[in-house]
Image 1: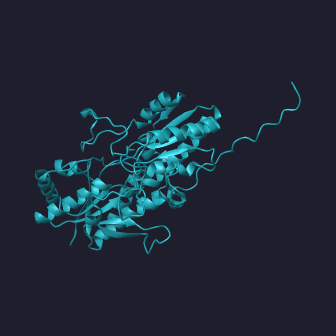
Image 2 (image 1 turned 135 degrees about the horizontal axis):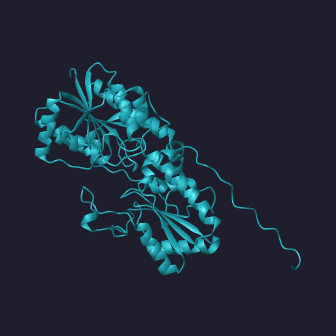
Image 3 (image 1 turned 45 degrees about the vertical axis):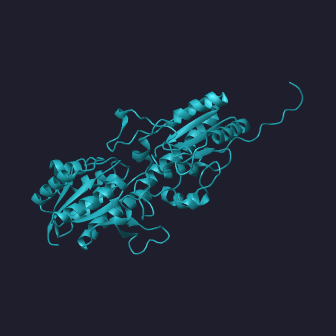
Length: 400
C-alpha cells in the first residue's frame, strides 16, 4: 500500500497507561515516510461515524511526553457497536480523509470492533490496513502474555490491600470487604494476594468470578479468622457468581445499564457486608475504590508503561511492514524474542475472554497459588514494605 494517512482510535475503559500507547504510536507514525497525516477519532468509533476527527501529528515532543504520563484517554473513548449504516458512514469519512492505515487501541470489545470494521471495509472495497493494540486493566485479552493497563491497576489493588490491612489491625475492626472491579474476570482481585507476607496479613479471603461463591463457606472461613486474630480483610471481584452462574449481586434497573446493555455489577461488597452483619452478628464495612484502581498514576508500574509504549510503537511498524488484521501481543518476560512482542490474527482473539489460568486457581482461601504471584510480581514491581506486627507482650510478674 502506498502513502496515506493514519487514523488512531481509543476504545473501552481507560487505564493509567492508555495514553502511553497513543503517545508512542504518534511519535512512531510521524517518523514514517509512508504516513502523511496522523488523525485521531474523538470518543472511539463514534468519532469515525460523526466525522469528529482531530489531527495529532502536530504535537510537540513536550506534549507527547505529557501525554505519555497522563491517565485516561486523550481522544475520548466509548463502548459502541455500529450498525451497517454507521459502518458505511465510517467508510465515507475515512475515504475522504485518505486513511490507509488504522490503529485500534483497546480491549476485547475494541478488538472485536476492529475485526468487524475490517470485514465490512473489505466488502465495501475500501482498502485499509488495520492493527490492534491491546489495553485493559482486566487482563482478559487472549494470546498476549499480559495487557497494558493491568499491571498498574494490579499494583494499586495489591498496595491498597496491604495499606488497608495496616489500618484495620491498628484499631481492630472485625471485618472489611474490599470490592475490586472485574465484571467477569478475577485477574485484578487476585492481585491483592501480593500484599500478603504472613498468615496474619491481609487479604485473608479472596473470591474471583472464575470460581463459584458459596455463602456458607465464606461465612465459616471468615468467622474462624476473626475468632483467631480479631479482624479480617476479604477481597472480592464485583462480578463473583453463585454456583448456578448468576451474579451474587447486580443492579437490574435500566438506568444503570451500560452502553452494551449489561447490568451494573458494583455493590457486592456492601451486599456481603450486610450478610456478614446479619449472619455473624459482627460489625462489617465495605470499601470500594472502583475506577480509581484503573487510573492511579501514583501506582503506575514502570514495566506496564514500557509495555504500553512498546505495543503502540510496534503497531505502527507492523502497518509499515504490510501487516493487517493483526494485534500486537506481548511475549512472556522470560521469552521476549527479538522485540518483546508478536503479531496474532484478530480473528483468533475477537470474542475470546481469557480467565485466570486454571492451573493457578486453588480451593484455598486466597483462590490463587504461588504460580500466579510468580507471574505477576515482576510486572507489578516492589510494593511498600511495612513493620511487622509488634512482638509479644512482656510477661506480667507478680500482682499489681
